[in-house]
Length: 68
Image (cartoon, rainbow, N blue to C red; front, side, top):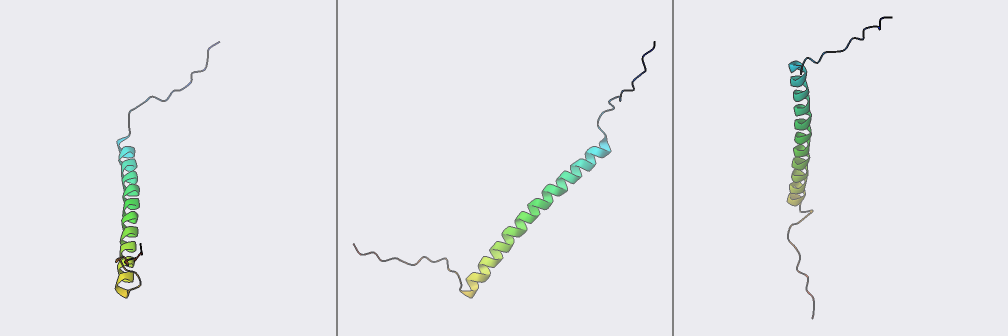
């Protein structure tokens, strides 16, 4: 009785097109997250300076007088 032949996939090596696609997708995702981080920092800085110009916040510490 002959055993049926089972087809095995032969390893052909990495697919260059897939590797390029994966690299581009990973790079664009990481770059997008990095850009969003910088936009958030820029927004917070802009809000701080707007509040500073309106006089709602200050960076000068008030002197606390303590009696000995």
